[in-house]
Length: 225
Image 1 (cartoon, rainbow, N blue to C red):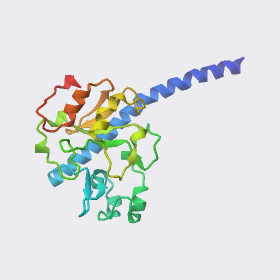
Image 2 (image 1 turned 120 degrees about the horizontal axis):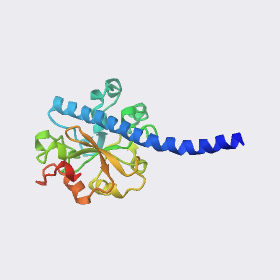
Image 3 (image 1 turned 180 degrees about the vertical axis):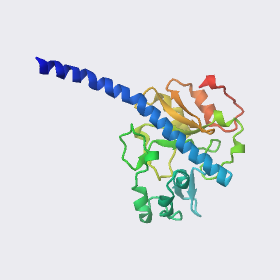
Image 4 (image 1 turned 90 degrees about the vertical axis):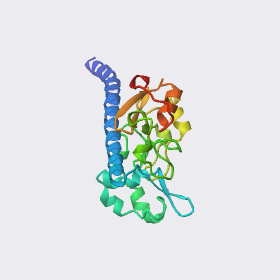
């Protein structure tokens, strides 16, 4: 009888523990995003602009992600020095680097492979990250506190952290309808000013559209999102 009681109590305790872990991990991921955002702003202070979403070769072929470019600004200079930026991220010469796990790019809630990331930049011609060109902060006319820079996606959309792949407009606009979000009920997002907020899955699509643009003449107040 005593054993049965213990087993019942364990059965009740485990779901509660898992439920408690989710908010804690959401907070932990928000902290990670804040650090990545800090690395991007440090990059911008050094070079006068945010990095492009990815670098390209002379023929326009994507080479390296912004995540690779900010390694020196997130205490990963040694790894950065081992990467051949003239060769694609998945070239054999960069094999050791792209197999490396970067803790700062890996959400503790994800079940995706260790060398992948669920932290993606919002990329587009009128977004914070221009696909192939550096973006000066002065270009962000809608305001740094009202412009999305990074988002967190589900395992379904995880990519190798070195891959020149990020969030398209369609992906961002559909985040509210993604049922398998890592933290349930919404997603973490980092704005250009470095602030991190948890965006509810019920957020209006039109609000998301406005938050993506850097100069859409569509200012939003904090109550809008």
